[in-house]
Amino acid sequence: MIAYSKKRWTVSILFSIGASFFGKKVRMKKTPGKESELRGLIIKKALELIDKKGFDGFSLREVARELGVSHGAPYRHFADKDALISQITVEGFLILSECLQNAFVQDVSPVEQLAEMGRQYLEFALAHPDYYRLLFDKKKYVNTECLEGDPESIAGNATFEILENQIRKISPEKTPEEISADALIVWSSVHGLAMLLLSGNLLHKGFSRENKEALHGFAFERIIRILNLPQT
Image (cartoon, rainbow, N blue to C red; front, side, top):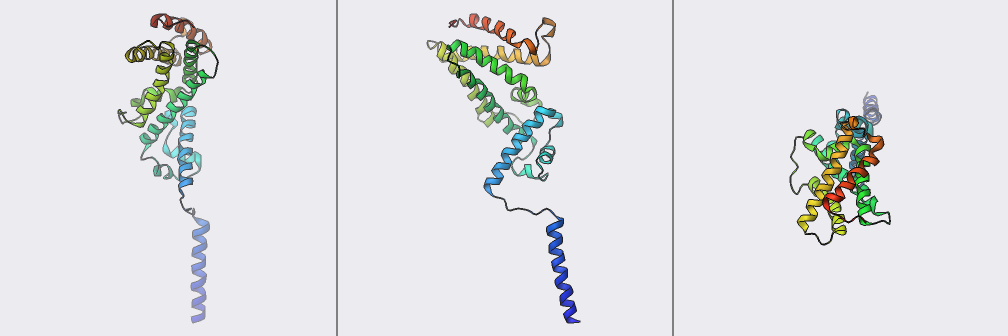
């Protein structure tokens, strides 16, 4: 009886271990490298979902499901959806900055580089409409304020400085205040075109995404005149 009881007890323990191993997800030991990698994957997947489905189809649970991880995994890196969106905003400004930097690849005049920056900006906005709207209308999607000194503000200001530096290269004699004002006029003009094209509100004027190049050239010529920038 004693031997039988010991045998049954041993079999029971082994069965329990096997069931817990094969029947449940095994928690792997977290390592800093893997956790950092997962954080990047979460941001990347969220960007893909925003581009594909817009914000209506975007949630932390959807991100987790797409990545094949537990629903709680994203919360190890982001307190909530707002926190993830804030980080996405930072990433967005970095991507936009890279797009603007593409204008400097060409060996052309500073004014022509400025025009190319405008084209790159429009391309980014039209290729990623939901993402683009998030960058400049964050309040529509989250419940938190973007304050000076926040990562989003720092990233946005750094992107704007690329434009300011280009204006400075074109007109080095201008004061910092004048350069900032000129950069604001250029940005608001191109930003306005992007928003109007995205909304389709220029269709009745004969402008659409298909002829955005002509529209940009038309607008940029007038920006040059208004700001009294050199033509070459």
